[in-house]
Length: 143
Image (cartoon, rainbow, N blue to C red; front, side, top):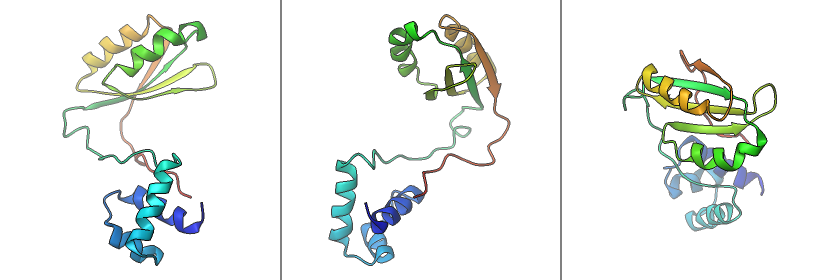
């Protein structure tokens, strides 16, 4: 991966809908050359997908929270399929520290969050933090 690939990746992270012609003008290549580079980045697994960023509040998800959970490693075979099937789970990370899992969720209400946390507690102890605001939104990795 060279500097041109890095610039293409940064541009796509800013807006994945940039037209090829725009990208080509920014990296001083032809559109077919940029297309070939993007295809290679996808094939190599560097670009893993393209996503629409939506406003959860406008979709009725007014409660964003992070749930710390201690999970016995023996429960991972049951927990991973369970958590993957939960539509309100935005992210689930295996982490170091007192808790072993960090789960990001979005719910329409605190009552629904409470119900979910109660279900999670069959896997281990939890601690929940409700998000008040997000001064830095999710963003790509700058290269």
